Image (tube, rainbow, N blue to C red; front, side):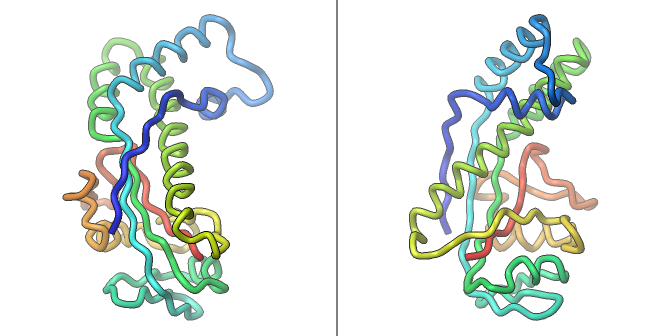
Length: 196
């Protein structure tokens, strides 16, 4: 099992603007100032981390066995995603509980800032995953990788979160847990599968 930290020096503000609903237009100067200030505030508190494991796999029509693990990836969509693969990487990434705290502290004061911080956080966790997989793939240069397949996508059950996190020991390693309703905490955390 590997655990690593990612250092973000800036957040993709274009992606954050997209999350805020700006598509073909740029935010006006006042909104841009709010985004830049929220980015500064967010970068002060985030502690991006990730952990992962790599397994040999056996792919069936509607499930994928991870050899040596109790975790079975159920669903036709994940089976299709991994059908030409030899291995699967399971990963969890997070921005840390400090982001949840920042969002809670900001909420009563200014809902616009909450929305901006939330959008920046969404962009940041995607950057963390991108960087994590660049790092991971340095160990698998002879392989081609698939795109990241998120738990809950297609017919890949959200209930997979619990055993996936247990398999990674993500609670102890990077502080990510799951609620009874399969929501990750801290909120700005993700789980995914990539095929090799």
